[in-house]
Amino acid sequence: MRLAVISDTHVPGREARIPDWVRERLREADHVVHAGDFDAPETLGTVRDLAGGDERLTAVRGNVDPPGVDLPATATLAVEGVRFLVTHGTGSHAGYRERVAGFVRDEAGPDAVGISGHTHQYLDARTDGVRLLNPGSATGARPATVASMMAVDVADGEVSVTRVSP
Image (cartoon, rainbow, N blue to C red; front, side):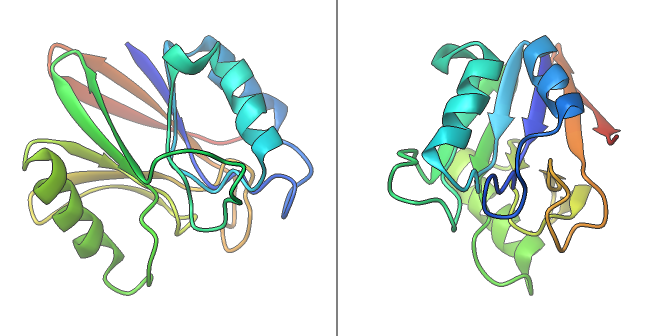
């Protein structure tokens, strides 16, 4: 199964729209994950449509999302024997990795993979034994220096990640 993983779109607050290359990846994916900071209810609606509906979208609320973005703070997703915990990662950038890894371990177990956003910085690393994925900002919203997202292939309990940029 192929997941398109994005975060920190910040549309329309920082960017006018989700880039075409991201839209194409979302349409092609088997499932879409958005780790928060849509910025507007209309952006959530756009991502939901590009994913193909709620059943093909796992999304969480970010720290700048207004009340109309009615999403949970965390969500879990089980795919091909892998459990993912999705959270925005809100809080200080200092200690971000340790905080998110601890949260993933406490909420979903040490074997779960954490998907988060917030920093706008691409990340695929292990922290305290937990694999953490952060796709960066799909629109390149500052402080990102380039737009990025992840294509995550999951099969038979294995996770393969590819960084995707324009």
